Structures are given as C-alpha cells and as structure tokens.
Image (cartoon, rainbow, N blue to C red; front, top):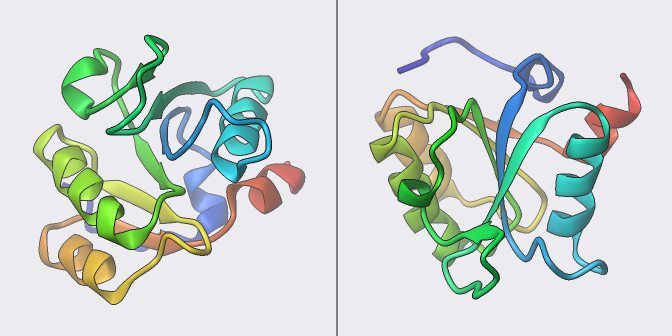
Length: 128
C-alpha cells in the first residue's frame, strides 16, 4: 500500500479511476466527475452498490482493470464500505469529495495504508 503524502492535484497524475456515486444521473456530481475524467483521457469506471445499470459496477470485484484512485461521491455511511472494498482489491488512494468525507473514512484509510485526500476532482481537472 501507498504511504506517500498526496495533495488532490497529485492524484491527477494517476490515470485509472473509479468514481463511486450516482454516475448515471446528469444532475449529480458523480456523473459530472466521471464524464470530465473520461473527456480528459482518464480510464474511469462508475461504481454504486445499488445501481442496476450494466455499465456501473456494484463492487470492486466487477472491475477487472487496474484502479489507482477511488473518488468518493457518496454519503459517508455508504462510503466507508466502498473504501473497505477498495482496499481489499488493492486500491490505496482515496479522494473524498465534499459531502463524502468523514473522520471514520479518514481514520480507516490512515490505519490501513491508504492515502486519504480531501478535494474536488472538477477543480483539479480545471487546472490541467
């Protein structure tokens, strides 16, 4: 696992992302983030445990590609379970969007060798 300290802008160097949230609804930030990453040349998958669309993974077992960064756009109660699943599948970097952050998620990441960063992917993409 990765014990390096990261800022949100540093995570943009990694090209393989999972956006956890409601990625099928155009009015949701998860949708906007996933599409912005894709338009900027990133490999990106959507993930939501309750989604029924075949293009959206419900867990990390359904994602066969390498994942560098988990972008959290879900409530913290659901987010902690997604972070645990991510760790079990070798993901070691988490970017928590506003509204998805919690001390529980941050503590879990720190205690389990995962980089935890609070930031906004759309802001960081705008800097590229």
